Image (cartoon, rainbow over all chains, first blue to last red; front, side):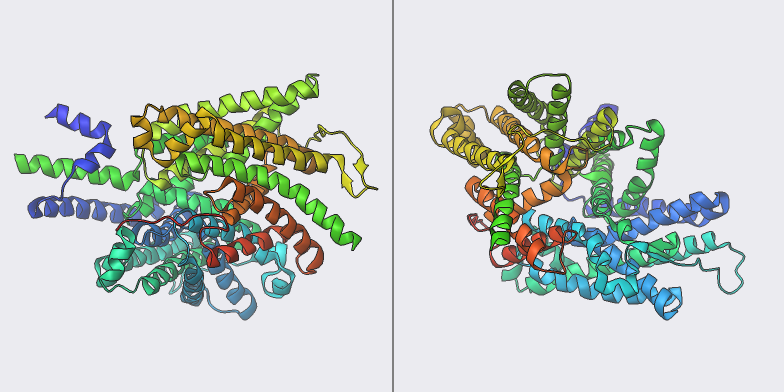
Length: 348
Length: 291
């Protein structure tokens, strides 16, 4: 028995290939494990801000914000199979929407979130239309171009009246409402936590719905999907829109939490980081977004601690080693492990 | 009129650099069907190696071949040590590994040679021809790019190794059956791409100055050129590189809002536009796929 487990742990990739569809009984067993894990995570999530200092709370909030953005990217890449190396652009649009609404029009910060979502949905949908013509590497490059252009677009002089150009916009930190006994950091943590949870539930439902199946059919084989009556053009653009919506809301939250935005906060490195988070968490596995968020939030700091001068190199090495160890991300590893587990329980 | 000619020539000259970079990108894309995001950093590192040798007093005519050889070995080593163990992992995992390589090489160069900007002498010396219209360096750049292109063409068309490399890229299984060592052909592709990158780096360094981040925008233009010409065609890549150089210069000069800062966006915007109408690039071929 122990021999069995070691072999599967050593080669997750081959294990994934070997796993056939688990029997229903085993599947519910897995679902139980997942649910328990979810409840534990939730409990930790609620308790965390009371047990840690303000800076750690801020970092955890940012981690969840990245997770929401990665969730959006996962809907596009993992579920619909379209690459994007430019999601930082949608993050930036969301952040600027929130900041400009608060700064120029004095709108309350909560109201900026749905607005950022709507605007990003439209931007994403519109960007999705030309993107229909591209796939694979070409789409990756076109979106990469978008990511590179973004900071320069926000520096443009015609928009300077709203964006204040390179100077950026400073936002004041909101206090907890209704006299809740929370400091602003804790309040923002819980706000992000709630929105993240809502985003996750919506994404799950979307993936489980008819629309979700259509999106996955397009990912697996666009031509077959089309011949089965799926409107590929519409659904692909919609996937772009929804994905941008998630990332835009994350961007708006990010602007509120960081309290400052400028064009250079949205350097293309942000887009690259989101992709790294997506892959580390597991492409197509929604909860992986949280791990991806944790990776891009904390691992660069760890690298910095290991070596000041070579922090970039350390981060790069960690990234590459991660890909050797788990080429399909944490999601793939987990799937392989659970598959092996349920197989064993079946034979028992 | 003189301004136009001047800008055209400058465009062609910088286009030569992009063409070199695009060529390197296409080389690797042909061999492994992935876009190497670390390509620019590899070229940057090679250029630093050349700079270091120059600083040690090695004569220029010796520095260039030495750098090319070192870069070639480096490219092969990266393929063997880093890329090969990855096997047939998903595309996105490859992209993450490239990003990792990017971070490592960039940080390493910054650590060894620090981030200050260094001047880099031109291999063709100072001075200019035709009454200051074009500098010696620009002429040299165009000539070198064209030479490299012709040599590559001959290599892939007429030599045994070149044909074997093409076969390995086209159909790995069949190539293996006729006795081609496909793994080594891929490594060779990496080595050659690194060597071409080194040449591009040495040519561009006198213009943009040497520093660890010098290659980022160059790589983007290289990608743009490669995509414009079609990722499956080396000739297309070179043509695309020249086009991007010309477009970028003319747009920067004649469209007032754009100016220097927005050159990059406008070039990329043009590329996206071309792609929308011609998704496989100007010279690319359409891949027919079975359902």
